[in-house]
Length: 494
Image (cartoon, rainbow, N blue to C red; front, side):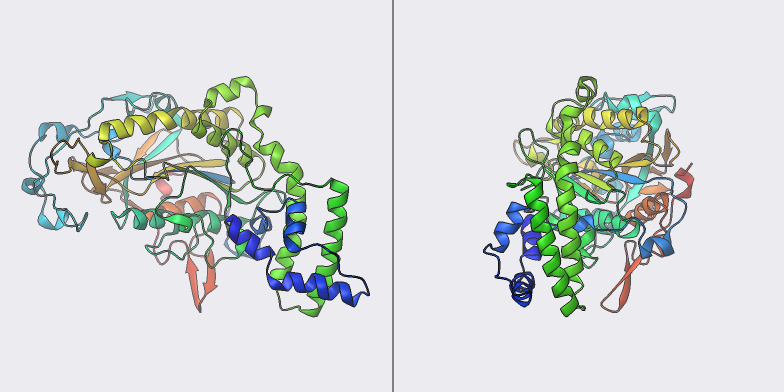
């Protein structure tokens, strides 16, 4: 939930009326402070922390729960569309056909399915521009731009046959997060916390760390029609910044406790008068939880508590700090943590007019490689990898041909949703395998294709949730993350 939305939730008129009317009914003089004074005094600007209120065992979990393989998820989303051909899926046949026209190889229908504003008939086949080597006992192919990640491939499960329904950024982002092509549906993290709640009642169940606002906007972490308790809390772990606004209180704990007790008594009176107002219970619990969070959250977000060896493993970078924070969050009971990388400006969008494919992917891989590898190594050595599912995802891949170059433009690839690569690690998966495949040119997922619905169904399954049973009734219809689709990919589960 955004800061503005959270403030709006706790500062609506009914709360003000309850303070004034309830105080009068008790024969007391109404206290001389306003709503903003109360909230800021309590340190609750980034409250209502209503997303902290999910119970560890909800009614949904009771009906949809199955034996879990994982307890938590760390979702790493590379915004812009990372190229499978420059990362994890080299295609030798592209070298043999380099320079040939796409229109001579692919049908008009295939080439018409990418971008309605562009034509690709005269684009030329482009082989992978980076060198690849096999790594680990599993022999996974990894690009030269991921030297650190190549060291942990035996812990990774590659899915090389991903496909989705749209090559448009905003639609692709929303699909990968909500399962639907339109905004207005809950995100994956919201569904997970709705089904399982949070293990730590003093922390959010769903935390997002982003380096900007992507074109998908709030839709990628919004709870939509699910209860507000399932919405994400946005955290900022940049050096020298407070992770959450107003986390520190202007008053001592004793004074805060007295203020909380007063507000709870007044709210209880109001609740008795208006039992149909379900939001009031959420507000009451939110104040209690946020009060407790002031003591626990600063410690969890404090990376100086880690050893120098661990901090060096992740590296002193913005992305490295996010990855280390993600590990600290899941070990402290946060159910779902997402890192949106390259959100501002779609950094992984490797068009020729956006810096070029080579410069783009070298820069992005250098920024993220060390942190991701460190996260897997750290989770494994602390025993958390077995119960934490790490997902590396993107909205789609890139085309096997370059975009038609204009004067002075550099090499670039277009959007490609017919077949691309993602990977997962830990959380009950078979490590060190590659599942599925695209054709020899990397155009279509032809072996064991996996849709975004299948991916979502599999993630829920690993968490012990049945994607067909995890539903929420809205506007007289039962909605679910996978809509009416989705099959669990059992072949990648250990």
